[in-house]
Length: 220
Length: 220
DNA sequence: TGTACATCAGTGAACGCGCGTTCACTGATGTAC
DNA sequence: TGTACATCAGTGAACGCGCGTTCACTGATGTAC
Image 1 (tube, rainbow over the protein chains, first blue to last red):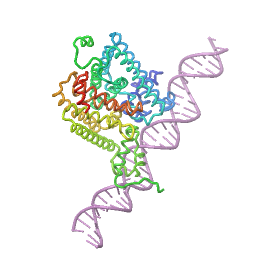
Image 2 (cartoon, rainbow over the protein chains, first blue to last red; image 1 turned 135 degrees about the horizontal axis):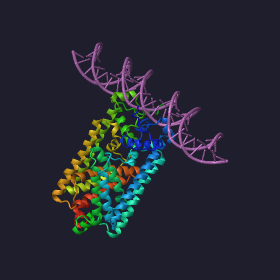
Image 3 (cartoon, chains in turn yellow, orange, red, blue; image 1 turned 120 degrees about the horizontal axis):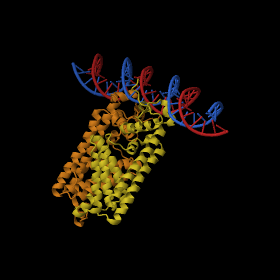
Image 4 (cartoon, each protein chain N blue to C red; image 1 turned 90 degrees about the horizontal axis):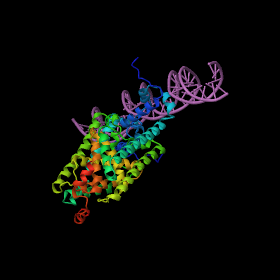
């Protein structure tokens, strides 16, 4: 056949990882077979075991790659948001809006979170992978907690909340929003949940009654 | 051996379902084998196929049972909360607190949500199961949306939120909280997220600044 | 009360397929001298 | 510049195990007459 896959040599490993990530998010890790990955990547089974010593290694590499990518994305997003805004609160609010917009513009349909996927199959993974998962969630907590502390120095919280919990809530709202999106087959459910979280953060620091002057600043 | 499993006859099907639910929440449906279920239930493989025509039927029955049980539990919980409270807002807030308490007192460790689990493996299920999943989420939305409408008649919302989204957010916060609990191995993460959601609902209808008189009523 | 039949809740043995893994091997490219 | 060797990115064939599923059969209990 001349219509064979292109087989750009050298990037087979990367193709394996790409197909694997998509498959894992749709079916779970256990249901994703090496067979289907090599078929999609255009190599043989032995080729797979050249790149990964076993399926466990695939699981670990997949998660490390995912966490790194996601962290980079969030760094970039909130750095950009802060550049547009001196104030840490307004930077956060702008960042959350940008996050919601990004999520609703995702090209390839419904997103998924590898961390949540692994959580719902965690008996299938070794301690190293589970630790990786926990550390990723804690890193998100630290990231947002630090920001909430900075915000609270300027805007004392008007609603009594624990900042670790409020920081975790963003991870939770995203993961929960993904489940809503998937279950309802409505890709907008996720960005709408992020915008609701944003309203909550706003209310915590600015209060519920909308102040027109502050409003104008924030919406800039 | 005399230390054999009790084999209370007649309830093998129920035992299969119980073991299956626990296993699915820990490993996912695909990774849960018929073999391990019958070993736990103390019957042979043919016995399994007497009760379920195939593994697909197990998936469906498991989900139907889960949804029904969970709906019953929520009906009961919020009915009780309303009996303690005339006001629909305060009934909701009390119900949410009771929910958080129930979740932190769960006897057998970390909970899980079968709907979320199925979402992260949805390519493995047929349309009927996926529809069941979507309908369950919509039922939760309707349930809480109706309550939010009743509340808003008495307490006009002070924060502009879409009530469908706010209703969905409870499902989302629970599912996201479960992921947090599982990833962090901290069973309190989930109830704390529910309490945060409760703060948000309170702020939406009562405002951010705490009114001491209202406070006294609510905390009753 | 006795007998025939039906239903319930399984048993036991066998099946074929797909899975993850191993092992010896290979052709192309890179590096040392 | 030529040759020897090493490394990279795989191939091909075989493996054994566990999985879901089928099929003919069975002993205990329930029901009709």
